[in-house]
Image 1 (tube, rainbow, N blue to C red):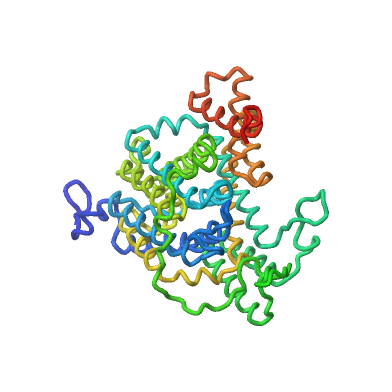
Image 2 (cartoon, helix red, strand yellow):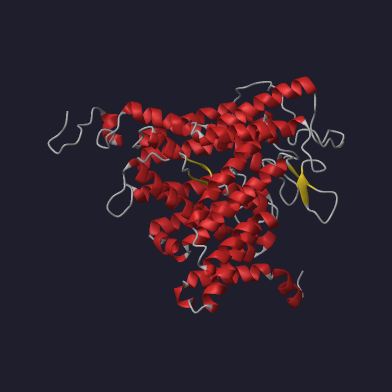
Length: 491
């Protein structure tokens, strides 16, 4: 029954709190939307451990402090933080938006930061970045920061990280390998050919995932990972291939890259949240120096901050919730929760958590309120009990998702003006140097420095904000740290 203003009268307390009828939705739609969003982005519980949980830090240690990967430990913490923050988004901000560890952000933390310091130091930088974002949101400075960095560089950073992730996926799957015959750096498979059952699993998984993505299958990435894992378990049970590196150190080029897949001893287990609190807030400054640490924080801030603004706007537009200024309801609360998610991700040692564009899948199913996020959050919390399943997934079954994610991030490249070379050249360098140097930091730094340089030499220096000059200067110092140290007689 409608009210005098034409709006639906709330049916109960839940309806009234979440404004379900007011936004033209229903409890059934919200429940369905929350479930769909979960299955669309649940792959992160599997993928995040395979990115941050399998790589050692500069001292050779893995997340959790062990001498080897503990994927179940990382998976449990990943699901816990995603669940809590998504619940908070729904209950406090009343917006159909889910949060989890950010892809691209976790790659940057793993391959750019943890390679120069301990995991605890790296996660401390993530916490600092989250605190800064929170301050920016609370003080209203987010708009100033948002307008300071050109849109093309934001896009180039995202595209470059996408290519970097795809390259990592191909290498980890054994599809691309380092050649033993210089000067050619990499080659296809072993000796230029694809050989071995694990590579077959990767190819089948990749093709199947691509087909599902093209056909808009809900949860395509998760289905692809699970399906390839089942295939890998069957093949290993029959062929007994074994890992690429045996317990005795023997190398099998045709073996499984991460772990030999097998049925787990248990599917459900009490989650171990031992990762929580394993961060060192200021250790990075002692390890790599103030300038390098600040640049790391700035890069995290840049990626996290702008991804959030774009995602929130896109989800609000899809749900028809934007006002005349293009902002969704409760935008301040949304941004506060998202900024706290960065802090929580670092504090839990699972990398910065951020808003997920996959939430659009739930909106497409009719979700319009925070009730959908509450449902998604509860499902993430239940997933913490399934963490043992993650430990059986080999690289070859999970890396197809990295390739597809790389493609999806690559599609943003059309937003770059390739006719304006003062934009195109920095964007190009940002994109290609990330995979070519195996460093996200190098790509971003090259982009900022060349952008400022080209604008200055073409008489457009007035278009540059003071912030861009400062950042470019910091990156120049970053690139020149070695000669500077030699000049002053240090290091």
